[in-house]
Length: 179
Image 1 (tube, rainbow, N blue to C red):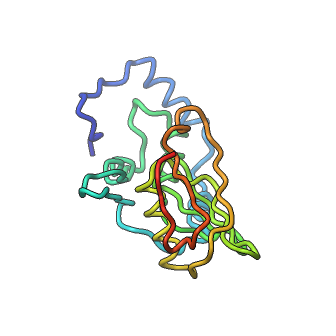
Image 2: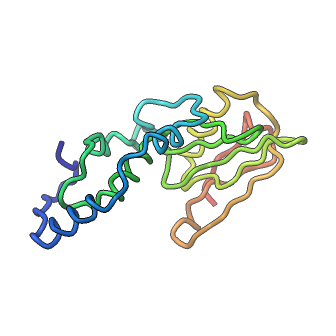
């Protein structure tokens, strides 16, 4: 399946093909435990992690990454990176451990929910309000609604302008807005 980019891809050079083949020979074989680890704690998701905005515009979707369904890496991609990217396609709500949940694959980062004694703690509320709201909706589709007690945001420079802001109101009516 071709990559959905509007730009045509160039074939791999002979040197790249040789390097990728060497890397494939040197890589350990696929480990079924990696797939099991990626799926551990899975609770639920939405198809293709497709998230739309207020005017039905597409905000986020993993549908464009279906080319990763191909088991074997193309000659232009390092086989270890291809394997890692395939594992990153496992998306949805996951139970990490008791009282800790994550939504993965709804953005370039993961959002973590910690069910604290006095309310819900949200860690890294994603990069835009639509993906954060979709993650909250998915979380509350499977977990009880609780009061938000804390929102912790770890920024890196590229995301500092567009991370969701959490309010201290009931999370069921939590305002997701740009900070």
